[in-house]
Amino acid sequence: MIEPSSAAALWGAVIVSGLYHGINPGMGWPLAVSAALMERKRSALPRALALLALGHFLAMVAILLPFSLLLFLVEWEMEIRIAAGALVIAMGVYLLINRRHPKILARIHPARLALWSFLAAMAHGAGLMLVPIFLGICGLIEADTGHAAAQQLMGSNVAIAFTVAAVHTFAMTAAGGLIAVVIYLWLGLKFLSRTWFNLDLVWALSLILVGAFGIYSALYGH
Image (tube, rainbow, N blue to C red):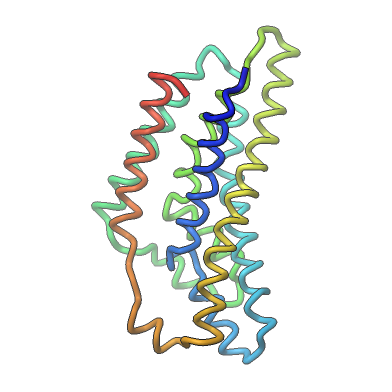
């Protein structure tokens, strides 16, 4: 039976991680502000945010789907979750060592916001941060044995992957969109240039923390 407190905590983590990604300038909200200011149209701001959200959602799905397909191997669930946690930690350590932003992001045309958002989320390990949380949610589902049950479980995990990606992206867009609207309508780019904040170190450390949590939850419970 699913424990309501465990489920609420894990879905809360999906939302909080989305808010965290939305606040991070590296996920693209400054580009939405810039697009609206350059076009001198308020309608450009929600359009840019929508494109950024689309790219981020596709990146989350691209990361979560392979794990959702693997988890029908119920007997290997713990090993899969430990390996996923180790992968997230490795990404965090890599970002700690290599602080340079991927050059490919600077070569993408500003109009291709969805593509930029997809690649930025991939390059920064945004989807990987969701993996331990996603696996924890999938782990709350009681698994039966048998081929039919395995297929049903796999279908359920795929649906959860899309739901997690959608909820996370909505929270990210809400947080980043709110910041973008405030800066666009009242503060302007001069304020942004004076108060720019860099979350690269915090981002890398948070990946390591989430990866460690994933390994702990696999070993000692959900």
